[in-house]
Length: 511
Image (cartoon, rainbow, N blue to C red):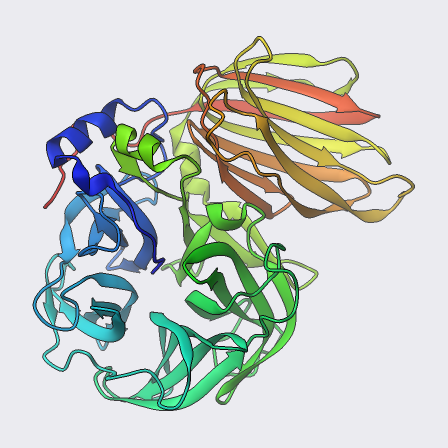
């Protein structure tokens, strides 16, 4: 649960809804709450064939004040139906908020493990659901862990990862050890109600690296997620050597930084890290991710797309926060994670534009127009070359959001290139964030597969399996798509589709 503050509570609820529905920057094929505040995905799962997305929510927009769990369901991960709020604060350990958590299957009983907030304390709580997951009863034992580990000076303590291992439940609670770094505390239970503290799974080192850097691990780990990347299950020896993955979001003194993950081996009561990796090159724009295995055995991940505009702009818009598109997580050949949008999203594709293969020289207007688009490109770059794909352009050069893919000089075989999102001209509004976002991508023999999903103010880029997610705020309403290059670039394939809305106006705002 990401701790921030927000002023939307000063606006009446009906007015928030009206503002949200009319905002031209509000995404239309990403999931967004009907109005108000949305942040961390919670309890993401498939239950009896239905996908469930719970999320941190306040319909009146006030974060850090009686936050609750919103709820939506889907049969296809594409179109979502709003459901009544799942959890609301009540007198007791969650009186000041029902914070982030997970959904587990307790011998057929749907059970939520979440952080209840009371004053400045966040402690693990449990709620049991009806068979259709529409109503929830909080356990009388709450909080099920009475306090953080004794004798440890912690920076914070919240968010959960829970799994079944043999005849025991195991749980990680995100935290940090003051003066050392972020950590995840490990617990064990037979019944999800009585937990024994085992110890820290692994403690990071906040003294390493630059707090402004892209791989700094923070003083606290939010939204920890532990899973086996390939075949097998946690706690077993993988036949194929598949690594275990520990995902976390680096936090420091109220500031959200970025999601990272360690690959390594979880064994016994500890995690032995092998390598640290960036989860998404957009930094805080893909934050607090949570993943699950669906019935088809796919590991699907959601994240929270934070805003990059001012509080005043969010109040004017009537809403804040976007849920990422669901992405499939797989293991790449080099032992890192690879990501791709779920193929079900192709159901939203509409008008199709295809360009024939060609060498790119002069700037090219593709003829594609729109602010809800799905673009796929296969390209080959010569050493020292760069492709620039412009989206959401105003047509006169005043506004343009540019995805850059570049290959270094002097490389003939397999190499590593760079993906960059240039937002310096994405908006004429000087108050929005335009900080540089970039990262390395695999580029075997100069080839790259590029997938770009544009949804008004949300942009998700996948370059040969490496994601970069961000927010942009064009003021001109432009939708020009252009291509330009430096050096020799071959466009092997270019396909573009307009994307349909996933819901119309007038969505119910459940109290």
